Image 1 (cartoon, helix red, strand yellow):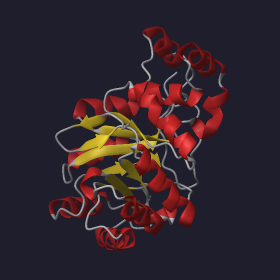
Image 2 (spheres, one colour; image 1 turned 45 degrees about the vertical axis):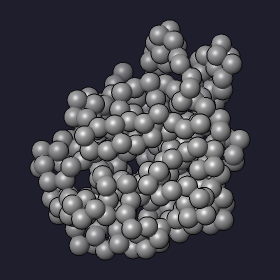
Image 3 (tube, one colour; image 1 turned 180 degrees about the horizontal axis):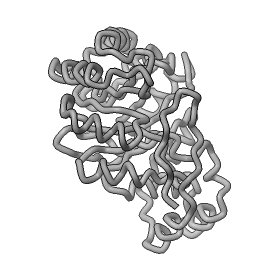
Image 4 (cartoon, helix red, strand yellow; image 1 turned 90 degrees about the vertical axis):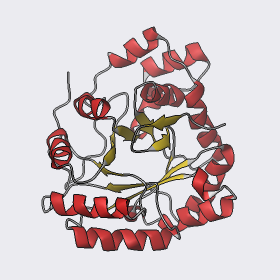
Length: 278
């Protein structure tokens, strides 16, 4: 079993992937191997996660052909200039033991971010074939619009926190018309969705789990992917099966009606977020 694929002029990626934060070492390597064995073909990591070596080892040991795997990594916000960004990415490739990644993202914006410089680095990395697609993560709408207006790098993806309690419609109004994939991290709301009565009710009607309902809600949106973290094979299989769950119009309406202002990832260095829609 594998997830459906999203295709745009700038990338083709499985809509459901494995998030690897905060797994480390042998646990991370085993989780990547398990996920690939189950049919996952999209693995998400980052320089800051401290697990690129383990992710690379899991891929190498899996027996799955590299060209069949969509691998994402991200460069941390302490590299706000192009030269530092390029050097950090070269180190990421070395840790991953990969000649390229499928998607390279700016992990977080920084107050010191030299946006044209970093976008130029992304464009050069992409042109060299070291990243087959490039994009950004945790950019609020004004900064995303600025990056797109500069038209320096072919931004293919925006990765942000998104789940049934944080809809990110302001950003979707930019990404979807532009043909940009939105990848949702923390798609299960740090586990809170698992106890939500509305999700539990929908899950019971479908013989599914609340986690599957939460993921299916995201995957029903055009150009939206999700990368839930799951360490055990059982949880990985549960999440992957969400790709087969078809929610009814009534289900989608009930989920759309939930408040969309619950943010779980908001570190001190986060940018000024868009105000959530009521």
